[in-house]
Image (cartoon, rainbow, N blue to C red; front, side, top):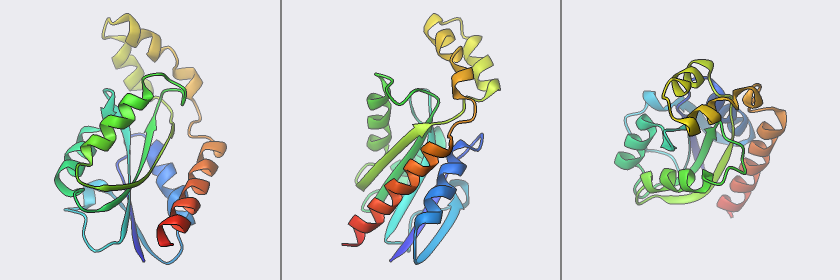
Amino acid sequence: MKVLVTYQSQTGNTKKVAEAIYGEIKGQKEIKELKELKGLEGYDLYFVGFPIQAFGPAHQAKIFLEEHAAGKNLVLFITHASPEDEELLPQWLDACQVAAVGANIVGIFNCRGELDEKVAELIKSSGDPKLDAWADLRPDTLGQPDAARLERARVFTRDIMKNFSN
């Protein structure tokens, strides 16, 4: 089986998760940034990672999935600055799945990443009290994804690989 791990990462959060996932895959595998790809061809399974931005998939990832995901076996891995128990997170993750129209979604992993300081400042300047409160949570995100979250990504990957190849 041939596997591709591809990701979009602005601040390094999603790249860390991509590298953890890649390390758990045995056999033929490659890791590439999403911007290096022209499409999804030549692999049996694709791990596609990106951050949540504006309550859905990052724009580049959304367009890429809409254009290339149909008919492919995909595993999505998604980073975000919200706590994993954020009540709106399921809606945001659903939006990520919708972008992968026509794909066979084999699994979805998500974890908290560090909220970039510049992004937090931009959010604070919006004047929206809800966004201000969210930006104020930045200190809670520092150091994310942490070792425990990266280990969760590794365990998730081992399970996907075991179940997908059976």
